[in-house]
Image (cartoon, rainbow, N blue to C red):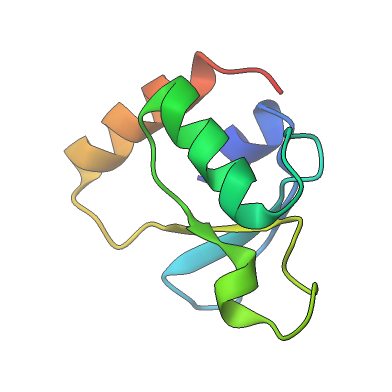
Length: 87
């Protein structure tokens, strides 16, 4: 997932043993991470969790969280959808 996120312009923070990855979504339109997550969902059909759900104040406004605790075929579908998008 990290290579796909990087390819579409959402720089990932490489996890060290987690089942999710945070990505820098500052390249996406929107004033906060919720708007950025909704924009990406609308454009690709791939859901993410707004970073603001995990931070106080505005700490997560440019972060999106992607879970990869999924079946391989589900991840492949998500990757293909994401690759149709360029930020």
